[in-house]
Image 1 (tube, rainbow, N blue to C red):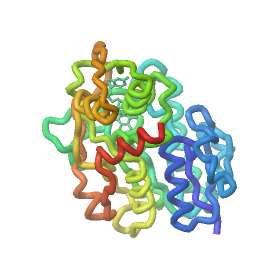
Image 2 (image 1 turned 135 degrees about the vertical axis):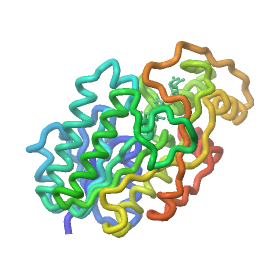
Image 3 (image 1 turned 180 degrees about the vertical axis):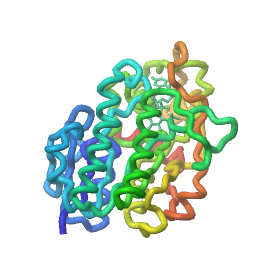
Image 4 (image 1 turned 90 degrees about the horizontal axis):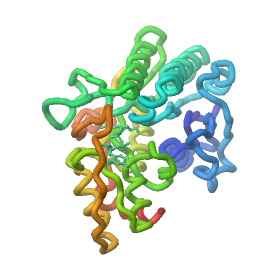
Length: 310
Ligand code: UD1
């Protein structure tokens, strides 16, 4: 039996999926990662169970042999940033659309068992009502959101036209240990954590009243595994929200974090960010029904565990 494959497996979320797979009983996991935003450090204590291939998903010939016969493929590799897709649209497009097409094509041609695709809550855009349900018409507001939506469409047609079992999970603002705060494009919670530790004010884009369904990384990794084990007849070609079901504004979140440390630091407010969604909250009913989704970490617990790590 060949190993499961995680593209982007040296990244923040991908490396959690690698750990979850090993915990579930996989002997080894194959990781495909170009190490641009991922890092070998993320796999340090499991390295002896990982076959790391430093290749780019834009290179079809390099990835095709690695996906051949894989029982499960988790496709996480991407340039995952709304603002970066606006400042650097070309690499964002080629990685997130061309690279994603390559992964589905290689999986289909190589007879892979199934692909679980990391889609994004950004595909919804600004909806009139919350929470956001899978049946809503997507309204992407940024190149990144459009690219992630295109990946879902490919997942669905690779299932219907090429007989590949695929499932898309729309991740809702994932956070947790190993999220890298070193880039201006980093997830907001990793940037907040670093500001808190260094006792510096964070920059908040807009009035801070935008809200997010922050979802702890282990819950998302767990759901990815559930999607990979669910009956193909139920989940193939489908898309599910991968969120916690709650939402917190950035102002609330910063206050909670300051409360943990017993400090009061006023954020600095800047202009709103282009492509930003106002509010985000997942309806989790479909994922609960078909995948047995059961988030284990409250926002408070997730924040505490993450802060300990930083
Ligand atoms: C979006 C997607 C998310 C996806 C992620 C990939 C939505 C609702 N979510 O996240 O599913 O996984 O892209 O990157 O579209 N902010 C600040 N100060 C900072 C940094 C960010 O105020 O220093 C603000 C942003 O303007 C935004 C919020 O924090 O309003 C969250 O930003 P970020 O963590 O980058 O994620 P999203 O763009 O929401």
